[in-house]
Image (cartoon, rainbow, N blue to C red):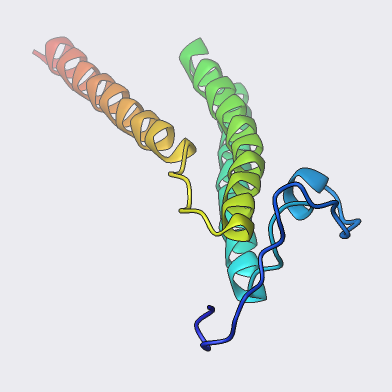
Length: 146
């Protein structure tokens, strides 16, 4: 039964798909869910894609700034990591959307977000590296002044 108390029929897992939408691995299984759940899943995937695009844009900005200001090669390395992480996050969003949509259609529990721990770990590493760099620069400046 759905949230309105109406009976929801679920086809047999071996039944031939009647839906011709792609990807069939998503739309060819289970039953059609309440559209609000599918749209919420899509919005979540698009938010992950926007986050990935932001990482790519940040990488491009870092490379541009590094070129203009003649910054050390570490800035270009950080820009490369940001761009690659943004692309990986966008790809992960697609796979996460697919897994969640299949779970919704099959009436199974939603899968855990695979990219979230990696993103949090990456932010933590970035914060530690930048904090270490700031401390290094402060000690270097204090040593040069004294």
